[in-house]
Length: 153
Image (cartoon, rainbow, N blue to C red; front, side):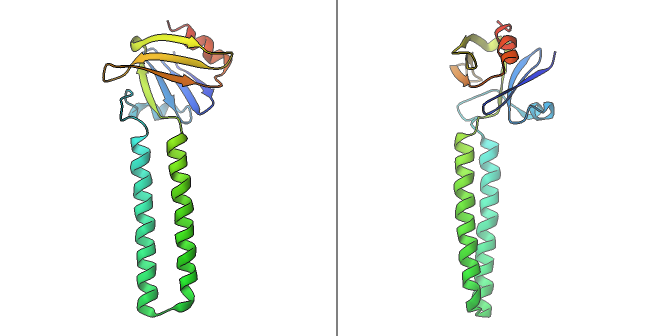
């Protein structure tokens, strides 16, 4: 059995062994997912975000160096725009990472309880990789997905 369902912040993929929380519902995305731990919250996303920011900082430094060496006064405005663009990208990147639903998997045998909050919200109680009980709230889940998840237990 392989199913996937949309919710407010992404997709839930379900197979015979695991419940996967993914960004786009694509099954190729689940191969790299690990069980949730205290550190799971989008570590890969943070790494790629910081790599991108380092790239922009290097570009700004090189642009400033070239402008200073060639003494191009007219290009200080371009440098200023590049700094503004980098600040905007930094802000959007941090907001996206902090408010995006994390991606991870939950082995079906580690699910303790599934609680339907209202018509479209589900709270799942499960044991994480560290052996601690955690909960995750899935909002605005498709109705067929709610039925499928409830049938797990």
